[in-house]
Amino acid sequence: MARTALITGASSGIGATCAVALAAEGFRVFLTARRRQALEQVAERINAAHGEGDRAAWFAGDVTDASARGAAVQAMMDRWGRIDVLVNNAGYALPGVCEEVSLDDVRDQFEVNTFAALAMMQLVGPQMHKQGHGRIINMSSISGRLSFPSLGMYAASKHALEAISDAARQEFRPWNIRVALIEPNEIATDIWRRSRDLLRAEPERMRQSPFAPFYSRQARWIDRVLTDGAASADAVALAVCRAATARRPRARYCLPAKARVRMLMTYLPASWQDWLIRQALRRVEDR
Image (cartoon, rainbow, N blue to C red; front, side, top):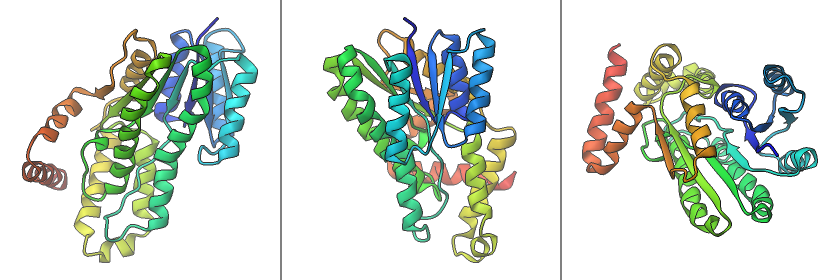
């Protein structure tokens, strides 16, 4: 029987690319996200590529809605009777400095990036216990271990996801359920387009803020990521496929190579880290 994978945030970007790649590896893929039409298009493309109507299926729903999460998992079980891999990909990056960011927005950031991922793990865990195996792949970021100015809330949500994953990796081990983290850096996808849109939503307030230089640098950095400074989502999909199929998956897949170099910063004193981040932001501003 073909292995199955459930992918959240699969209507575009990294999620859709992972779905295509896992289908090419022989998985049946179940896609979930809010955008019904986009999901249907991705599923149709996968089914057409493999000459069958049951390689991909989809369920439209908000990952932060408990009833939608439960319905998606149940729909997959009704269709294929198993869940071999969960890819927790849904997420976005909330811009804002700590002093000014809305607490309601921060709660929403954690609902999408952290709580929904944990809830999905809780939903698929019992089924994976029964199967005696499973893979849980959580989409983190380089920000899961490094925090950058005006992206602290995004980093906090990913730090939390990493802590949850580290605990779950040990807790699920007796049932042969492996937990892996994907830690990409600067991937040109909708997550940064949404972040840019949020930055542009209140231009006057941003300009008058005492933290205006931070917002300006972040906007420039996002523009660079979306034009010529980012790796392809294909690199992330390759890491997800490795985590899904390796006999002994790694705890973390950090990519591309530049991200692995940056992760070396975590071993430096905090003052050195701060200096290096300031230099990187200045280089962005000078371009």
